[in-house]
Amino acid sequence: MEVRPAHLVGARSAVLHAAPMPRIVPRSAWARGGMPKQPPPRYDDKVIAVFVHHTDSPNRYACADVPRIIRALYAGQIGYRRWDDIGYNFLVDRCGRIYEGRAGGVERPVTGAHTQGFNHRTAGIAAIGTFTAGVPVPRAMTAAIAAVAAWKLGLADIDPRTKVRLISSNGRSRYEQGATVLLPALAGHRDGYATTCPGAALSALLPAIRQRAAHLQGRR
Image (cartoon, rainbow, N blue to C red):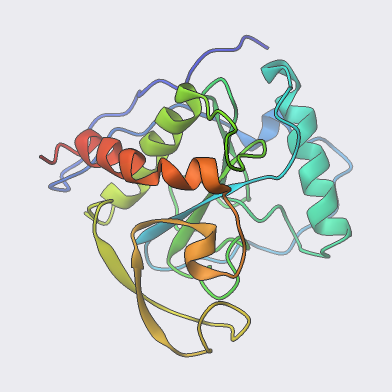
């Protein structure tokens, strides 16, 4: 499989601050026959926030091996965690390629399983690798995260630099069940859950990623 960065291929919609849809590698590129049968996808009305994660897996990989890596992540999440599918809506590799994760359609507001308490009206974007303090984060990866976040948030005309109100659905998040909280529209996993994810190095870049995503939406 040829390795190349994600390119913006879609046209802007009628939404005031829409962003182009980035090129997304379909689920069929990594999902193979013989996978367990899954229940139908669940949907929300729209996506108003995205959570950025890292997969806490090795960084030294060939981008041609990413489909195999995603299959391994999938196997762990449906096996050890006993989920019905991979939790992330999207995954991004070190070369800037964006992959479809959870089934249900990339353009639809699929309910994921990525941030305890805050899976509703959000999307999860996982950076493949481990980005703790001092670990370099590839520019192609941060550009791809910004591109998919700008597109998904733009569908609801949400500025990636703002904060949005979300309701915690689970008391095991940072907030008690039913609490309405104000969180970044482009957040790190640790904003909603007691974790170090997406790692100190990637977390430090979130302000710049928000700014780039806003620029892709045509905002000043």
